Amino acid sequence: MKNLVILGGGYGGMKILNELLPNHLPEDVTITLVDRVPYHCLKTEYYALAAGTISDKEVRVSFPEHPRLMIKYGEVTGIDAANHQIIMDNAEPIVYDDVVIGLGCEDKYHNVPGAAEFTYSIQSIGKARRTYSVLNNLGSGSVVGIVGAGLSGVELASELSESREDLQIKLFDRGNHILSAFPERLSKYVENWFVRHNVEIINQSNITKVEEGRLFNNEKPIECDVIVWTAGIQANKIVRQMDGEKDRLGRLVVTPHHHLPNDEHVFIVGDCASSPNAPSAQLAEGQAEQIVEVLRKRWNGEPLPATFPTIKLKGVLGSLGKKQGFGMMADRAITGRVARILKSGILWMYKYHNG
Ligand SMILES: Cc1cc2nc3c(=O)[nH]c(=O)nc-3n(C[C@H](O)[C@H](O)[C@H](O)COP(=O)(O)OP(=O)(O)OC[C@H]3O[C@@H](n4cnc5c(N)ncnc54)[C@H](O)[C@@H]3O)c2cc1C
Image 1 (cartoon, rainbow, N blue to C red):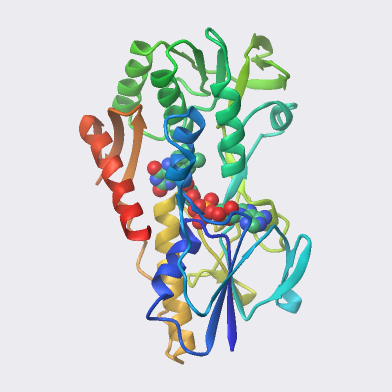
Image 2 (cartoon, helix red, strand yellow):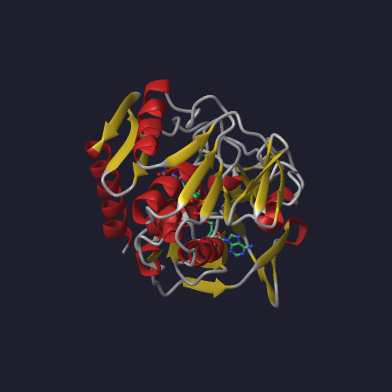
């Protein structure tokens, strides 16, 4: 029997499982899925989990069941590619014939002193739960500083402001306008929403230091009861520690067949894989589909295409609380209720197909 090991049951790992099970797994192949969490987590909804507007259960999806799928729950600590082994914390190494690394990403603190120690995070389920706990225990009038006004910072700030009107929320943004990756019209729409909902946007900010209960913006101290960091991500530490060429987010550079250039048995998916595109769940799923094609062709002894078509991304949608949203679909900016309904619909479909 050959063993395909999937590290991480996130969007990439789950897509590989769903493509191979139940009908496309050859009789002589088993799959071992490894994750520290005993269910697939909907990371795109962590902003709402942290804000306390959805329950924990709403971000969990059960892993599939199959006679040749083994699931190991635990912490991956390293990859010994020379011996085809996954190193685990407090467990025997797992031997693989092929491995897909889909361990997601972590916060990037840009060497800001105190940021790792004194800020909260929404980059893993455990961290999002801690953020939920601290945010929801705040008393009236407390100050919440959110550092970073990209998609996740904006979604968290809006969700929190809508559900806790009694908090003072400060959104720290590096640029002249929030959501710098989006057209200016869209950024202005979102800024106006924040003005109406009493969220203070602090543009051209540069957080130079963080201490307990305080951050320094352009060296000026600002007292905050809770600080949440949404100002950058990088590939999972396991991947950053591996040999091989990496991009500026620590993501490993791969071949057109999504494996390491010097090892055709180590595939990389999602936020761990270098790509010209920004990391996203959609991208992870597109890469996963192509990895499955490579594996299936190899297992069947068929030749591989030299390259795959470019992965088509449908666009980006963000929420502004429960009723409004914004996004880019087919290169067109959309705002308001329609954007929010579309976002909810996509989540519903995802849960329907994976539940
Ligand atoms: C608030 C927020 C909103 C977002 N909104 C969108 C959106 O609207 N659309 C979109 O496309 N993308 C969105 N994203 C990005 C998207 O969530 C990620 O790009 C996507 O989750 C990446 O998928 P992945 O499979 O690479 O990793 P993940 O989905 O992060 O899965 C990684 C898995 O690895 C496991 N793991 C990690 N380390 C270890 C370890 N050492 N040992 C064992 N297990 C481990 C984790 O438990 C997890 O199950 C959003 C992200 C955030 C934070």
